[in-house]
Image (cartoon, rainbow, N blue to C red):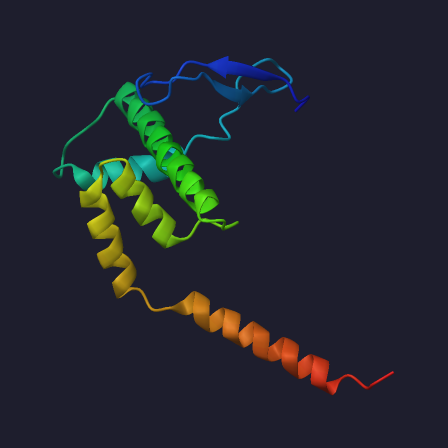
Amino acid sequence: MDGRQIMLEPLFPQLFPQPVAQAVEPEGKPSDAHILPKANVDRMVSASLPLGSKTSIEAKVVVQHLASEFVAFVTSEADAVSKARGDRCITSKHLIQAFENLGLGQYAASLGAMLAAQPPTTAKRVATVQQRVATISIQQPAA
């Protein structure tokens, strides 16, 4: 990639008043780096429809772009929430607040329920890494 960018008009201009910059490949074609993988979106679409239902390729592409833009929209708001709080990393609390700020409280409630059901694996991993670091620093001979 040579670093060039093109400006794309968003699908929902009322939500994104500014055009979105997109990277351009050397051949001059737009990069799909910001788009969710097609296979994953296809799986979600087919799981949501009754058995035996079919969708056109155009419909799958539209859903892929809409889902990608929705994720970017919510992530952008979560980033604004995290920066307003002085945090450097977006957490689940920032995502929940972003959904509420955007008027998507029903998603915030289901996200909160899903997170409550998840085991706190990240906290365990952080504690384990901190223990290993402390153990290594204790075992090193003093200079």
